[in-house]
Length: 119
Image (tube, rainbow, N blue to C red; front, side, top):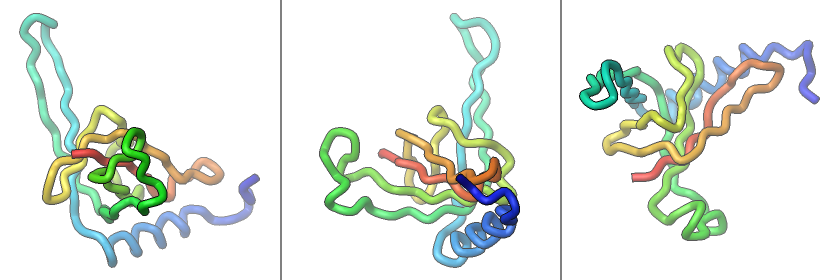
């Protein structure tokens, strides 16, 4: 159980600083549809973010749930304008669809997101 007296906002700032130091600027792309279903209007909005893109360890690659080309993406939560969803896309030199998102959120404070990205 998380310690309710610990300042997790400081941990979020530390995570953001480390991701910025070792990572790169990226983008979360979100598409929203409006209008009638037979002729929808698609609006694309890009949200800047800071990310680290890593390969999965060989022992985690099973070929089904985690493929060899999948990437583990750490996304800083600090100053992020949106909460990422599996419908979004991560842009980091190339586009990654989001397979899964796991926020690290002790005591309700999201420190960072671990995203499984697939291209």
